[in-house]
Each structure stands twice: as C-alpha cells, then as structure tokens.
Image (tube, rainbow, N blue to C red; front, side, top):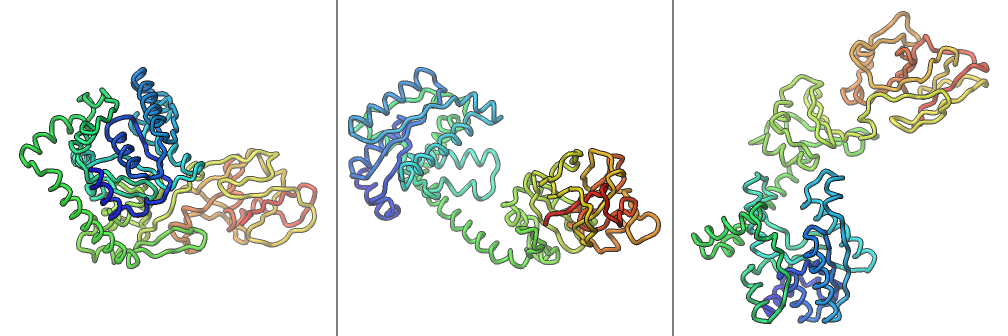
Length: 441
C-alpha cells in the first residue's frame, strides 16, 4: 500500500511534494493510516484534530490518543474543541453539517496562520460509494453522482483509490493502533445503514463493486464535462448582460430558450448558480404574462415581454418600507439620501428636490410603489396614477421594481425619487423653512 500510494501521488498529486501539508485526523483508522503512510514517505505533515464533544469521555480520549500519536512521531499537532450541539441549535442546522462547517473553517484558518499549502483528508473508495448511494436515495443532479472530488481548491484526498478493507489490512499488518468510534455501528444514521446493510449485499452481487463503481464515476465525470462545455457554449446565446448599475444582471432570450431541445433541462443547468429550485414554475414563466416572476433565495427571474430578467435580490432591500425620522440628515438604505436646510437658492437637478418643512409630517416614508398610487406631477395639472406615469415614460419592468417613493407620513407622495416631484410639495423659492432632499448617486 505504501508503494501504491507513493506512485499514486507521483502520478496524480505531484503538487503535494515539497509542500506543507495539514492532515485532518480523527483518530480513526483511515486518518491514522494516511498519517503513517505520509510520515513513512517523508512528507512535511502536521495534524489537526477536532473535538466536537459529541461522545463525552470518548471524545476526550480521541484527542489524547491523537496527541500521543503525533508526539511519538514528533509531528506538529493542533487540537480544538467545539460545543457542536449548542452551535447546531443556535444555527438551526444538523449536527453533521455544523461539525463539517466548523472543521473546514478551522482548517482554513490554520492554513492561513501557519502557511500550510494543502489540507488532506482520509476519504477512501467506500466513502465515495456510500456518498453516491446517499445522494441516490435523496435525489440529486449530476454533481451528486460524480463522487467526492480528489482535489478541490486546497483540499486533497489521496486515499480515494483505496478500499476500507485495504486500509484496515495495512493497519493490522503494521500493528498500527487507532480509535474506534462506536457511533459508526449505529443504524440511526443513513450512512451507517448503507454501509452495514446495503453495500454488503451489493458486494455479494458484484465482488468487484468498487472497481466497477470507480469506472462509472469516471464515465459520469466525463459526461459532466461534456455537459459543462455545452452549457458554456449555449449561455452567451441565451444570456445578455444589461444595465450599467445592475452589474451581474442578465436578460434571458425566450426565443433562444425555446429553440433548445429540452428547455427545462437547460434552464436547470443555466440557472443552478442562482439557487433556483422551482424549475416547473420557471418553464411556465416562458409563456406567462409580463410581470410574473419566480424568486430564489438570492435572485429573481421576471417575465418581460420576450425575455426573462435575472437580477440579484438585495437583502437590504427585501424590506419594502423604511421610515425617516425628523432629525436624520443622511440615510444609506434602501437608497442614499441627504436632507438639510437650504436657504440659498434652488438648483435644478433631477436628483434634488426642495420642499417646505411645514408641509412635512414625520417620520417620512420610503417605500416601493403599489397599484393605485397616484401623484400630482410637477408641470402637469391634476393627478396621475404612477402606473400610467411608468407607461408614458416607458419604464421597463425592472425599472419599476427598482423605483422608490418618498412619502409624507400621511402617505401623500412627495417624490418619485430621482425622477419626478409631486407639485403639492414643490417649493420655488428658498427660505429658512426650505428642506433640500438630495439623492446621492
């Protein structure tokens, strides 16, 4: 196994040679064997152990074992304890996800502080198979069926070609001690059920299961690459960047989408980076009326005649109503405004209005427009619905979405911010009661 790993690293992980490596070690047989192998091969290694305090005294004994293992070999050793259960409850996450996040966040901090080049984990071929089967039971896209990556950013997994059996045999033959996690035998975890009940049956059906599975993974990776290349080729035809202010916004050409052999499948891959999940609704959006939209946790997709407008949701703007107290002179959210007394002279500027303080009732309101809103536009007689104003000014759906109104506390509109003032609040001469409201751009 030692020679096989040496050759495997030479062929597939040559970048590890001469680098500072941080091994994630639990005390279990996999990480202990990985450490022993790299120690024997004279790699520059250090160890990092997480004590998640999930097994009480057993967790403490794990930490002591790893410390002793490192000291006997004169290997640098880092250890940290976490109150994992408490943090999981606070973050409303599963213990498994919380532990994983804590582990990798700490590892990355150790790398930054101590100049480690790579983090090594001891995932092996059986782990890969189990992960595949877990994703199969839960449902997954192609990403979930291409296996645990051998390299991802600064994380490397050189044991993926070895089976659990090979690792156990090496440890036994070389009299290597390790800690056994009793929870690995518990069938309350899905991974353990698959490990102890499903995989043995599959190996009975096909004794060469891991080898067959490895070839399947490679085929799926190749298929994924073909798909990735196809999506990259199609994306420029479907996505058109638009808007100077809205960097990262795109207009999706519906005509180009409908030309695709399977619009839903292509939309799944094109929009996956934007966290959409309701792809049936997105397909329905292609034939929906203008104004309909589908929202993800980070973006929205808005139907606009012959296109779909993809824009990022500003979490700070998720709130649609803001209040502006009397003594506040500057705000930055949802937009940047400055209010101050101005008795000099009126300067005509679309980003500035002048109002009489006597007409203002605080707190002022900054909000999005709603159906039925109307105002008295400067330069016109009578009132006008904002929806009609938008139509006359040829506002796009996105421009309507991004428009903010400044209103008096009684909801009378003062200003379509940056666009048009209400004549009821217009002031033509500056005096000591004049308030200047300016939109910072």
